[in-house]
Image 1: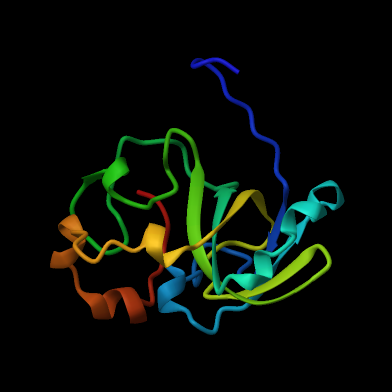
Image 2: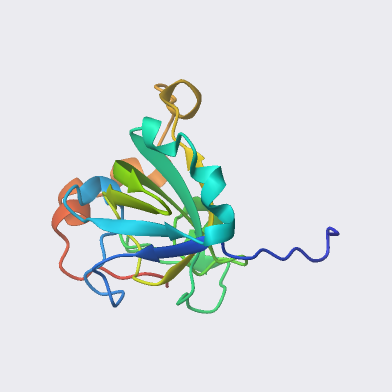
Amino acid sequence: MTSESITYQPIGVIHSPFAQKTGTPIQGAFAPDAAGSIEVFERFEEGLQDVDLFSHLHLLYAFHQAPPPSLTCIPFLDDRPRGVFATRAPCRPNAIGLSVVRVLSRQGRTIRVTELDVLDGTPLLDIKPFVPQFDARPDAGSGWITQTDHDRAVHGADQRFGP
């Protein structure tokens, strides 16, 4: 591995009720009932030991249906162009997504989750536990998002990804 090239292989696949971008929640926090499952490939099953002791997990995944990369985009919650690194849009130079999901249960290689905001069949790159002591920052700022319409995020009918 060099600074010029990095290759990752999926460790599993995410199953969700969302077959297309339209209608997929923009963030799992706005979709508490959006349930699905994470299927980890057999050779990685041992790594799931104790994962169900956590209430939430970070999922890192490949935006496998992302539009071409762009350094600017108009995010769902805004009407003006923003730098892609100031958004969660999938049109990134490295199409890697990040979601926080709630763990319902684990059986073997399958973790049932809710608060899911990804497309069905999404390649899973990694799982990390959500640890409030590490991940929550009470004094964190939300940048331009503080100026957006919260109702649009929760109830927006024209949900979309990318520019």
